[in-house]
Amino acid sequence: LQKALGSHIQQVAQQGNMPQGDVANGLAAVLPMLIDKLTPQGTLPADQGEVNSALEMLKSKLAA
Image 1 (spheres, rainbow, N blue to C red):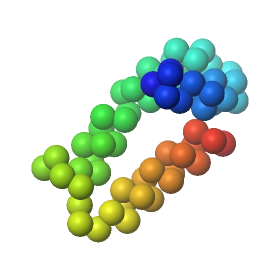
Image 2 (image 1 turned 180 degrees about the vertical axis):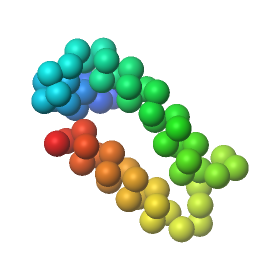
Image 3 (image 1 turned 90 degrees about the vertical axis):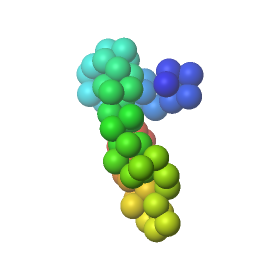
Image 4 (image 1 turned 60 degrees about the horizontal axis):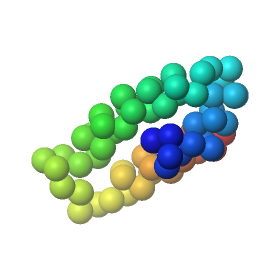
């Protein structure tokens, strides 16, 4: 995650006055649950509106 989202993690950490490692660990804990929730039975739903909205929400949180 640090390689893929390093600048976003750093930004969130600075805004939240938290160590980057804590932010990365929290994201690492949440992402599997998010992916699991968005892909029932391990497949993408036919209506990907939920997937897109969840990804946009995550993107906005990281960019905030």
